[in-house]
Length: 554
Image: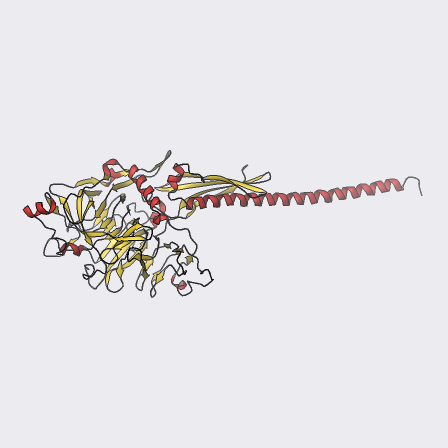
């Protein structure tokens, strides 16, 4: 009833309502700002990850990533627009882990005023056994499937490139129930274009499963192989770059260097015989190498070889061959490198020390073939299962632009080609001037050229084949096949290391000729122990603890 009472009450009520409305507006604005900020954070992070994925994709397309980065290749950096967000990325060389190159992808994503950074160190994934195709050449333009078979133990990761066949069949061939103890990476999809599952019948054979649609390894890319071979040559000590002249006049001459590894008083050494002449021989039905993509030819397999008379081998400690790979101011750990512009024979005929023993870190690159003429093992500690132990620092790498094959020692005992022991006038007429037959492998009684390999061949090495396949020569030949040590019709081949090959090379024919496989991955190869950067994987993965993402202000 008092005058003026209603007006203050109304004003107070209005103020209360205004305060409540303001609070609601501020709360709503805050929620909206939080939503906008969260949206910007998410967009910026997704944009940064997209830049990382683009960097990874660009790396996977390069024949030789180190060469591409050295040449300031376009695509190593760039920007991507996503409407309300964007990113900028850059791929660069970071450092070496041992002798293994490490790369960095730095990608910054932006949305509005918000930025996120993805900073990742990546390495090239190393596969235990990689192949361009699971097929062996059988003619100038034809190939046959190679089957994994009963009795085989494959304790090694396997990668098979996409064959791109039509109709679309399974790109791995299996007979019976071989044991696949590690993962399988396939370049192809699991289903055909029509949706049929190609792997239902065999999927249970793979204890660690199968990854499909994986990037192809680049071993089939001749430009990638040549780039790495040339960089290896240029980084090798000139004293250990060899250009062998095969001067013996034989029907099918090949200039070669013979390398015999051994240990003398605790020092790893190599006996180097340059200017050897290998006599080639027409091989069996599977002895092909690559002329060009999809084209093959029979090559001359190893029969025996000569050395110039009076030419003494050069014996050097492996440490003298040590060099480092360099990228800018960064250097890898040192390792031994030998480059041969021609063919290489590994092994000798010393029955007192018949096997090659490598004490040190060594990689051999040949522009031609590498012929293995005896077991090759690394010195140092081995585990109970025979594998080099994790702390063993001795390792061997073999890379050839031709093939890497185990010889058939029985060819030196054939009457065709000509008998290998030549003397006097006969030698002069045959070889042009004095040469001596140089036996390899083990004496098998009788004539000096009656040779044989051990019943169980051991190869402890990372093998990379740029011009064909890894395997054994003269398997399934019309003359009765390879010479076997026995007992039984087949010997055993134990590989402790890794293999990368363009096509499959035949190792044995099940139950009849050649070798039964026992392949095991040497996990030390994943740690950058091997000198020379000879890997050709097309997939790059984050290094351990290599992924970092953050706001720039952090």
